[in-house]
Image (cartoon, rainbow, N blue to C red; front, side, top):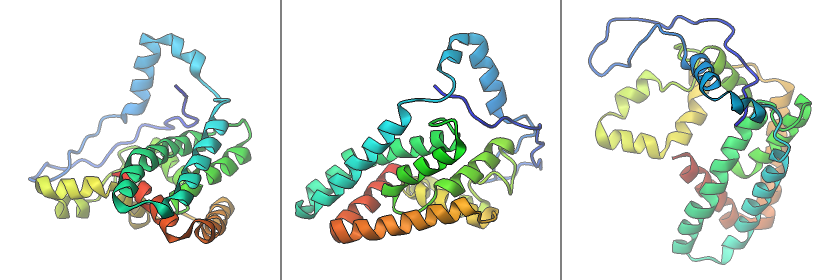
Length: 233
């Protein structure tokens, strides 16, 4: 278990309005992270021994990235049924683990130096095809600071999503493609300033994927995409 490097800086009052049919649930209660943290510490104070830097995180991250890229390289000789099975059971499992690794790394829990965490996040991001680790770091911090605040917390589905993906079938479609909404929603809800670390993240990812496509070919690249889609949905 690890700690968060960000704490709620103030109690945010969420927008409150009269509930209507097919609307979100609106609340003016305090975001739940803070109280949940207090409850856990009160019930299990021993978890404090697990706080701080995880010295193994950098190693497991690099190993997982190496395995995923290597598996993709050898997928060119695999038929489509084994391709799908490997993408799901191997690729999606690894990518899901790397999602969590990026989360921990962007909370600065791999190294004490922030720049080292940023660089490691580039590595963890590599098999995910699209650059996102540095923008995630910014948006995720906003999620912690202003959790549940409409127009700021981009983890909240938009009203458009709620209206389009209604009913059982609509929700299944949304759920299976959740990673796409999670990736595109922030740009629609709240734009952020592109900083030097985001530019470095994009540059590293573009060069890395270009080299990988050249080495592993279109099938290896497709394996990474399929793993990403399955892991996020």
